[in-house]
Image 1: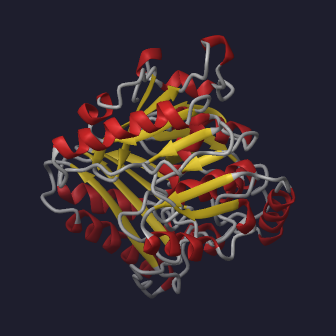
Image 2: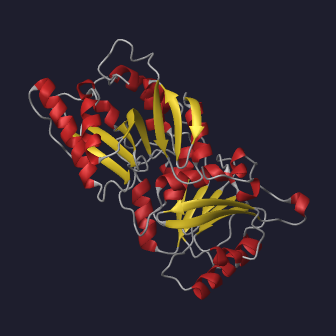
Image 3: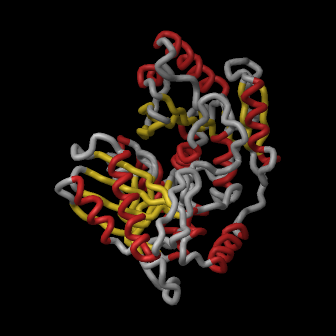
Length: 412
């Protein structure tokens, strides 16, 4: 990928590696295909593809399930630590950085050759600086906080891949979160949950235990086709030598023109008044502010009854700090509320405690393994029948249901 050359930048095709979360690879792959990527191949928490600059800009700005978009520059093998410096020094860094360009190394190291990720990062940094000093006569500065160019270093035993990070930050940082509250959910995870449910806004969405509002926000973003990064359209590719401002403005404008203006019913509720205030502040300046109704409500109260059937998405309490007996009691009560107050709806619930999920007492026919932070979780789908089974209400089936283990899902 020759960033130095301007004349053929629109036509040049280059490889990308897009990071995501466990089990979201098929959904991300579809996003990338829809945005123009070719030769798309799913991996473990990554999707590889080919694209041009226009598609690179689109994926960064619009993809909901992408964490980072990397552009591989060079792959090689090393047999000893010094090989890393020598191979990195041979790379034509002058095609990507000027002498006054700041840069930083983002390491991902899994190799017995190195006991600490700082050392290989330092060797690559020295190689880049020495190469540019030879070319320009001066060494560029390192800026770990806000570099002009961020370089991703992946070492897997003897295999090394050096990439440019076109995103510059984790793309789950949408820019709408003023305050995360207590243990906020990753935005990409929330977007993935909504994608798995297949919800497009045709039915009401209920989000009890809403916390800081992430699930509700991502649902509104998806239903209204709002670019994932609309609130924070800042990327590392904007500092590259081949950045095409006119192309970027076209991509940016075209994506914003696709935003839909339609009515949604999203009810986000929580018993914690402080958490609700955080959610309200987070959504205050978003374009769909009036699409989400925030309510202080006790999910277990008899007064908490949805107006009409719809989709209910729950991220209830779970984790190592809670006793299993307490969790099972809570989840048993969740099952009772589902059965008696949400009949006719479809429910999805995420938890790290499979025993507690079993305590819900309702058939959970769809299961997807996910990671919430460091916790291994399962997202489970439950159809809540109303009357006879043939009179039930359910969300329209989507390809996302093929993610469940019952459908032989692979994690790689």
